[in-house]
Length: 184
Image 1 (cartoon, rainbow, N blue to C red):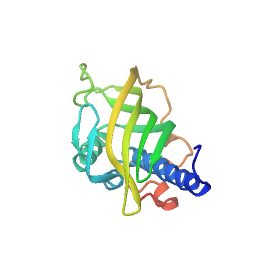
Image 2: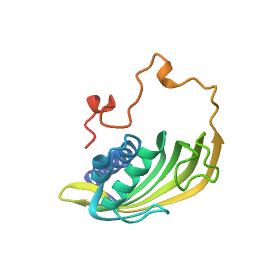
Image 3: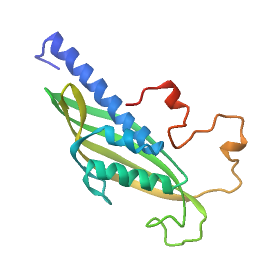
């Protein structure tokens, strides 16, 4: 951040952290099937291009939540983030790995509709235009780019997490994370 004052640099760092938190909240909304949380990261007039969905963000939040409820499990992991802030506008590129366990009967995902489980994994990037309105950063436009994907059969010999002595995650607002974090 050459040529900027200390205060401008601090403001940019705060903005980047707020944007980073926003992007992570998006993944929670997907993985917890929480339409309200997912919609909260976008402005009402935002646009989403997810490949198989292109349209307004509120419609995307409903579409994505419906999709995630139809699959067995999802885990979205965001990694490298490059965020550039310019006043009340920003752009971001965020790498994402998504792990999706689904059944071969899930619409549009399988030609062999035998109901067997398989894991679909993809690596991609979220390309975002963000804006700060009324003191709050949100996504104004997002495009998902998929760089690679693969599908693997689920090994039925694997032990289910529900058979282990762990606190099992929930794909709704009953998940323990809602008792620890304020996600909105």
